[in-house]
Length: 313
Image (tube, rainbow, N blue to C red; front, side):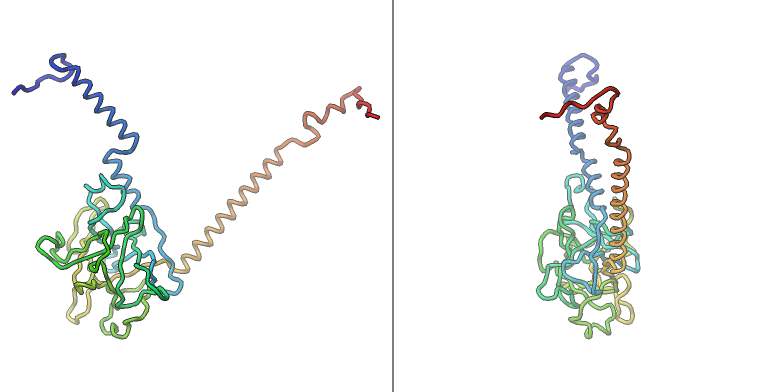
């Protein structure tokens, strides 16, 4: 077996073929770079897309509704439930695809990776109620419409760090994707059953099949493309009074009515400023235009010695 000890600049052997091969590789690289098909470009584009700002739904009556876009926030750790797709998939995909892990991220501003839609849309008034099964899915498009799901612990299916019940995002809508909301105070759960769920208040997110609560485990952290984040699992953690610990407390965040009204007012002010700017620009153009009596054809009849042509009889 012969080993090549010279580079293509030494004109021995198949030197011409080696040079053509290098030129073809460079040509393919430049074509992929222009079309954005390089792996590093795909990953960068996906990262930018899933971090785009998202407007949450407005709760006019103070309750959660089916179809609302919400951000699920954990007050104890000050983190938000977020999709966490592996870096290897980011190189090949243009949107979130399942199975996709979830984590508790310090990035709490609403964006595509940490906003969810309450569904499926139910009949009636559309208000979400305590102990009522529902599903949580990511946004359509770049979000991929993945469903938040969980299942019992097995030897192969469990959280990597804590070895607790795994929580992931998948495309299929099954019974494992059903969740329900419980009152965070155990002494009031019987009284609140069937009542509308208020927005922006502490609640318990319970998995219907396994009866385990969603938990942000701050003692287990790992590195992601977005920084160090915490592991999320389905685990009911209770204290000596049989009440859930703060790791099981979540807040379904929506936009406040005051915030929405203020944002609408700012938009109206910006539209008025744009209209005023356009009007001022139009008036400036009219003022800069030459008068009609100074037009080139207007002074021909007023030259010295000139006379008007005789009118036809």
